[in-house]
Length: 640
Image (cartoon, rainbow, N blue to C red; front, side, top):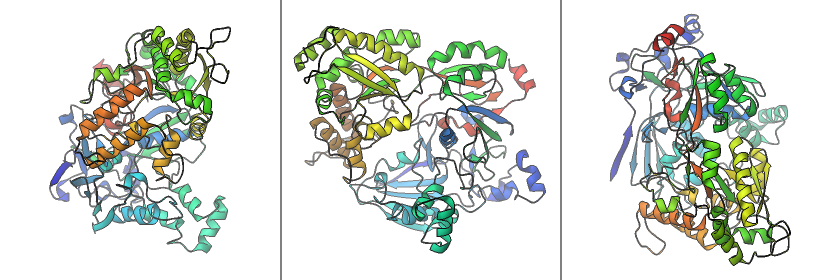
């Protein structure tokens, strides 16, 4: 049965001439000198019209430069996250809406028909059409040299790819033999899959379209090994580090690589407009300055920032508050949507066979959880504003069950000690630290990406109470990329990070984060790699509970268990959450800790208490950063 899932937020259905877009002041001079076509030609024939008053927001005034900070050059990718132009995206209520697409239809989670906006163009003015979808599918995803492992996992259902059809220049269709229920959700992710490419730009780096003698010159000039590496070097829509790569995002990078300050300028062909005919985004330029994260609070307090959240932690609040009146900004506290603000990830694929056996014992993981005094951590680091719980879904989720979220989260060192004794870890050295079966001291090394100050503080507090159960904790800061590579190779014993990104899932949300389906999951990276590469690399799970989670994940897609018994998606989620609660694969510490968000008092349409989460949400993405705008000083004074 055909299910009409969504339409645009407000779609202009009248003829194109009835829509009267206003020229953006930022481009007025270029248009007057004929260097750029007017907005009436840049706008799609069917733009996405955003009714801001209906959303409780004000129609803005275009212009201005928004200043923010990033801790690393590669974090210019955040503009792709925050800009949040997606084929289909979540709104502030976490409901899916067509965005880049004009509309779409889904039949039985198998047939997906996408309708593009006629006249929509890439940031360089070239038409965005079905050809851009075809190029990615045929010339990238199914090209053996560019994609040796074949199409990515999200394009497979029961390990089979879809049939791809072009209906007309503005309509494409994907048809699977079996349901692919998480396909649409994937398109709305903070890091989207980009199932399209600017074909007119990328063909110059593809051997299917460009003679090898010409490609060879480019290969040598750019220092690439072959044409595939050359193509991948420029095919980086998420990284956002190629200013020449056409984009559909609200802001485009106009700065070269390895800069200290990056300018992201408004996309002249962006597809969203307000009801007054003004093209979004309102803000002309986003300026991203690279700085050490430790300096972020001081730079905010010095008045160098208009909007910032990433890199700010709860310990930053005192210094942020000190500069509020002097620098005309407000440090807001937004609730977070992750299942746990701080969580421990034992690596069940750890290379050390003795430690691996200990980490895989459920009694050991339960003992670690019972040995954490979450109340002290919450009170010390978050002034009691967080919630001491395990890694589980939050109360706002229809899947919430209190017993799951709070399993083994009480501070009970006596019970923890009893569990460790039961395992047989009864021998101790002189200082009380238990000994492993091979006589080594039980010293757990927990690696952190070093990006959040409170993680180190929390580990110090955890280490104090773990000593009561005979375990010594050693915290080791590391670089994010280095840590992940070590984890993938089985070289990390345990890591600390946030829990599941989505703490408020519904039955229709994919439970892939709960099963070993991705290498990025630091509990079982080798098992995830095995699934992700369709058994080409990594290791197959060899524990009963993870195998059961994989079977349930498959049942969520199929609607039935392996024996043919029908099961609802809500039932699948319930079973998977219960397994995680019992097994303590991820040891949550504190949830719902507020996220500091610094907002200039001149900046409008920024929510007072917006949900801050990565997926779904894309941090500022669901709050539509393209709708933020600057009021002038007179308006600001009048409102204060």
